[in-house]
Image (cartoon, rainbow, N blue to C red; front, side):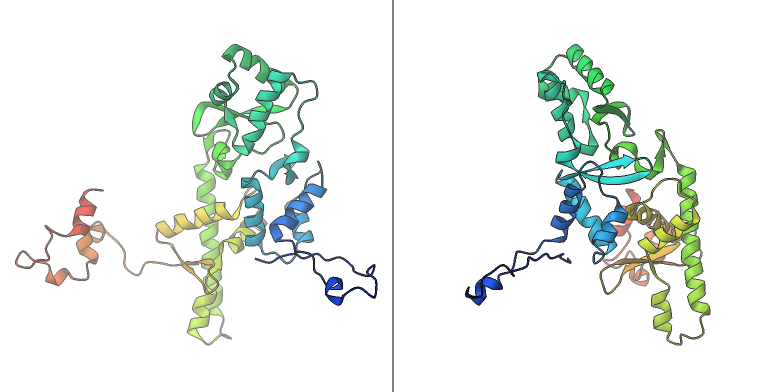
Length: 321
């Protein structure tokens, strides 16, 4: 992990002070600490992904996302949607308590604030605050009227409503992420993304194979692979998605293609997952799905041998699916 360092000038030290004291280094900041300081310094304005890229150019996409996720998980920062831009804010600066709140409202507000982007169910608020349901509902309505909190429907249960701070962007586990719109599963949107992702991988492979300047078959084979961020870059440029997609979203789409047998994936020498379009050399039918159809020792399988269909663990697993 790259670390972003800071140092201070020692010009104010006197010449007669020991050299060891002059050259004493300040403990370097880690990337996570540096990002937190940037977000903290931004105050209520917050910091966007573009701001982080400019401030921390040495970090890769994976490093930046990993450090931001750690800060969100540790409740050090929160994610907010300002107009059409997602911004990160320091939790201490963006979760101010309502000034005219009474003691009961403060208790409820603090419980909702601590729940972060996943929110909290009204039953959990009632249990933790020890407030009666009629009184709690009045408090929640009061905080909603002050725009301190908001109610969000969960895709996991249509009747379940969770409460979170007003300016927080709900977690994908609540909204369903890019695959849901107004509590409806967007199957057509997923199909479009799947087709375009496969189209990109197919075009990349065809371009590499047509390149006559590269003679090595191994080099050609390796360059037909693409990472998820390259596919995401292509999808973003096409403009087919009206919502902001993440690396995780594209990875789930590519994994669908892997399960369908249209794409293969591997870990490259740097430990990064790559994807390549592929086509099955043999068309599969119903018989090919039986374990016997792809068994490497099918010739040794018989009632006279110890190896037979009655004690085959693969056959047992297949018949219990």
